[in-house]
Length: 580
Image (cartoon, rainbow, N blue to C red; front, top):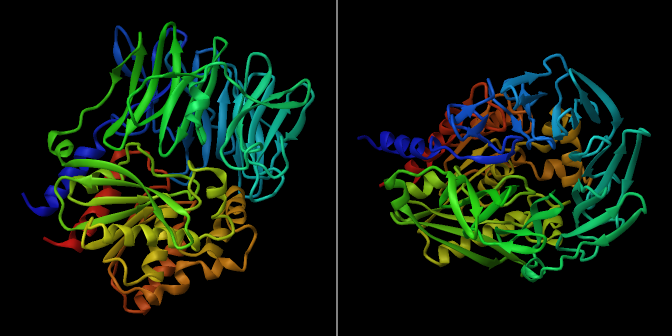
């Protein structure tokens, strides 16, 4: 077998191993989930008598939770060949039929929720961001939001969500839309605080996470809709308070009990009314009860995302894939360390070691920047470990999961302190003999950071792979729709004078080492045009680079074939960079 064939086989072995993510339990008690199994992102149901049944006819862009009455599951469909111009659809779980609102104006959809008869969502066009309601086969625009905001819950009477509603880049507020009065209300427990993802309980109270009382870690807060009063949520059981989560991945009320997934240091735990439910070490993403059972989604850096059930004190597998033996055998230890950066700030970093080391490590830079590398299955990391690379994944300032003070440090300074954090993690890895050569790779904001590092620290990395990168902030802004214009303004704290200064295209002539760029053709978040303009500058400067444009693909990869193409290009390039 040739070296390229070997790489392709490892990549495909990992990419085509299905993952399964729970969407809820339907009215019949069946597990509803989404997966890339079968060739595209789709919604399935696990029927006790018939087994796995795919319900969506075509690619689903974003799947939603099973509706409140258990009879539907909503989704969005990209009708723009990857451009993320989406329409709303749903699966009728009673008749197992798909329905799509094909006549609605396509928009970028920013959160949606289904009661079983109506769907509320936020959507962004080129000019505006609005709140919408789907009734039967029609869509009504309810109100203008014109801020970076999303819908998180809808009970049939009130739509709620959160976003940058006060136009303060370092805060977010809760919005409440009352369908009976058509009134849009914005609330916050403290001006300037971060408040996100409200749900509505059966007692008509909002529960959301907020740093209003800590200034840092996000606690659960209750807002009484009738009394206009906020208070911290306190459980009688002490497991939750003793765990002291920094943020929350999930919280829902079922049968009068609050199911909460708290998170810190890249891992999570499940609690029911404050009592911990023992699950495997790693990350629990969501949980839905049925009778005495609790179904949940679980994942780790070594374990593909799958569905489990907690039954009488024991967790067992429901839908879980097994990796090929050759891949599993290549996975070594996982370590979590905190590395001191230039100013003493600690950078939480995951180290994923290979059992087949070849003298090099890859610095993997996550996207976002308001995201993180956690102890979760990651198909942008796993193939590289299987190919013999140690992985160093720093959660630079701006990452989620480590408190709001840490996350907000990146606002107004993208490409500043975050680059120095990545540099500190790279130097730490070299000093600790994780490899003699440092390589760098990332996608989206991670692609930006890869370009930025290759141009700003041209002697530090042997080579780099930038996936779907930001090449020029000014040009990206001009090409963006309303929501990504808001995103850029927030990220830069409205400091437009920094756009050119922090754009990789400004420094193309600095490149010294080989660079690969992998760019989806129809990406509307980090568009192709600025990347092509960067490529022209690299050509004019006589630089060594590769450019791979993925046809008919957008920023969000929704088929295993497209994902395999991205990872094959990245893996072959990094392998070639290290050599034998």
